[in-house]
Amino acid sequence: METYIEIKNAVKTFGGTVQALRGVDLTVKKGEVVLIIGPSGSGKSTLLRSVNRLERLDSGTIFIDGECVTDEKADIRHIREEVGMVFQSFNLFPHLSVLDNITLSPTLVLKQGKEEAAATARRLLAKVGLSEKEAAWPEQLSGGQQQRVAIARALAMNPKVMLFDEPTSALDPEMIKEVLDVMTNLAEEGMTMLVVSHEMGFARAAAHRIIFMDAGQIVEEAPPETFFTSPREDRTRRFLEHIL
Amino acid sequence: MSKGSPSRGREDQTAGRTTINVTDGTLIPSKDEGGLLSSWNIGFFGAVALLVVLPLISPDPYLRILSFVPDGLVATFSVTLISIAFALMIGLFAGLGRISQNKAINRIATIYVEVIRGIPLLVQLFYIYYALGPLLKLQGPPAAILAMSICYGAYMAEIFRAGIQSIPKGQMEAALALGMSRSLALRKIIIPQTVKVILPPIGNEFIALLKDSSLVSILAVSDLLRRGREYASTSFRYFESYTVIALIYLVMTLFFSRVVAFMEEKLRHRGNVH
Image 1 (cartoon, each protein chain N blue to C red):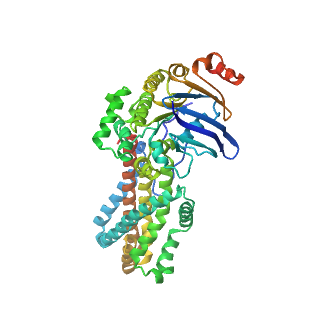
Image 2: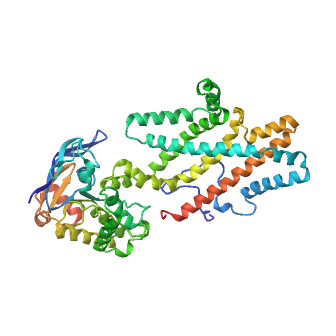
Image 3: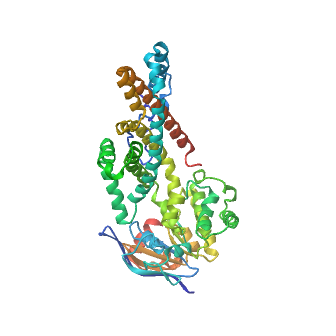
């Protein structure tokens, strides 16, 4: 498989003192589903958010499909078109209907026609099981439904990779499954995915590789079966005891 | 212990903290003050009644005053409306400047807001009309409009800035992650959401500006106050003239405060739905 995301020696400090990333190397291949876990403050979200430059690295480089994200002269908007992102807090646009949330960027950024964008949006809403909600307002949806709309919105840009930043952390337990099901389907279709999450069910079902981060560094990485049964590092074992 | 009274609508507790909301416009009537004897009703209908009854029982001078001042009313409203329109435009740009990531633009906008808000409006009016008069060569009304626009633009800038900053950061991040530029995201995502937040304070500034427009009477602008002064100085009926002027201002500001309250209520009920 060809390399899709390549992160080299990523370093990021917040406020001059808090080291969020202390030299992280990570490659993600096309079609690979990589799950990042780790305690809060381990830098996992920062790493994810630096992939589409919502955070700027202090040093290090990130390439996506051969394009350098960390280069100041890079066409970051074009790179972001190909990198879908799903947030913990959904971040749907509250002043737009569900359908308009999904069609806004394809029409404005990709210059799709209204009809074309709406047809794509309806197909994606069907895919996430929310066809009947296209005219609803975000505030009328449950958290799980909002997150599924957010996934559809990201997919409408036809991204080559999807980033998930703790997509189920803000959800009530009974809504987590509906979001994970959508993500698992996406993984089965061969989408390249980088996921920050502690959902071990999803990890076992869909992830190809698990990355354990602590204190701004990657401590251990392994396929899910070995990661959960025979972790190499002490720190990993202690962390797994807490969450399993 | 008695049961706590329901919280007053004007306290903003959305962020988990209570902010008090005292503005320089006017007291905005809250919904619980709907009774017949509410202070707003007493103030508004009392003033209207006086404006009707006084000319009836004593046409001279009250009816004469009332027929003398309407062109002043027109001047007051035109100065207010034109100034508010310019102030909104200045405010939007200065407010965006205040949150700009460009250091120079940010600095210029901040200095503008700080300087203007630190100088009394009356001094600004004198400055533009008299001090800069030889340079600008402006007549009274344009000078008044210029000064009021620049002054209120600074206050509007703070309203726009606060409104934009009240939108959660995730909204801009989601828009950027979807490939939008910062300015496109501002236009399509952020500013449409701020409208709901900033309309009430803008309504308040409108009322404040309506009242402050009386200051322009010193710049040879024949506004409401100046017409009253003209009548008073020819008839020597100072008490009657200024009573009528005060009542007219009171009726106007109380009327608009109710409009703003109505608007706030509408927006609250609509929630996020358009």
